[in-house]
Length: 76
Image (cartoon, rainbow, N blue to C red; front, side):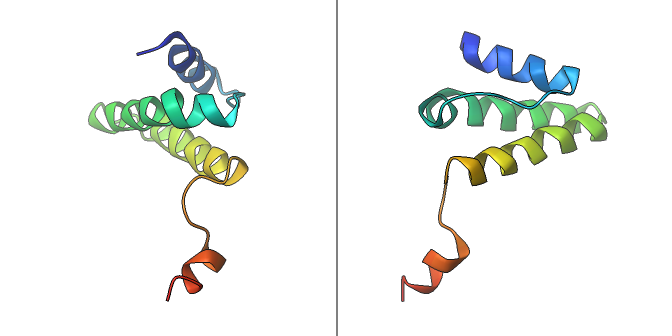
């Protein structure tokens, strides 16, 4: 895990939003936060799991990660 990923997870633990560039998010942080959410689920920490997944959703939207609903219609 990179230092950026550790800092991002620490921000989630403290209840703060993650601040990062799109490049950092795509390369380092997204996967680490998802793994953190899975670890939280395994240890029955539903609150932190939901916070982590909500942060992934927010950052996906902010950094245009993945295919949007409008783009999916244009694929066919």
